[in-house]
Length: 138
Image 1 (cartoon, rainbow, N blue to C red):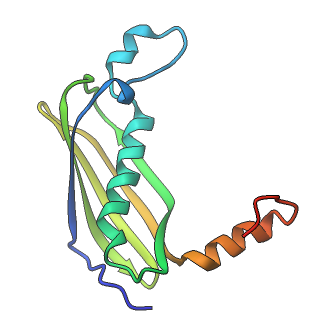
Image 2 (tube, helix red, strand yellow; image 1 turned 30 degrees about the vertical axis):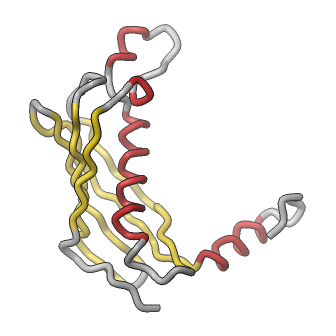
Image 3 (cartoon, one colour; image 1 turned 90 degrees about the vertical axis):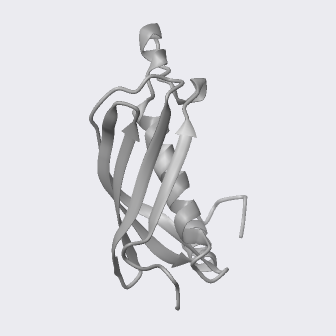
């Protein structure tokens, strides 16, 4: 399977954070003004998908298999952020990505993310094979 994913590829994911990015924990109203770690993880997933998808044949995609993030500093909801993803290494069907996130006050996030290149059809067959009694079928 041929693809065009190469080490050194960079994606800057820029966003002005909003209320949906805030923490939503019961009993922690004051934390709702902070960008949550789950929101940041979703941004990393979205950005990595955007970065890699067009570099693959149409019958392939990438799936996340391992993520390691340090959410080092709080960011207020409403602040602009930039999450930079950089392909550090490509090993067969594995893509290793380095992550750094910045807000107006400096770095707030760093980490590593591993995604695997997979055939969409085989992935779905494998998933439905794990759940033979599923009514959604493939």
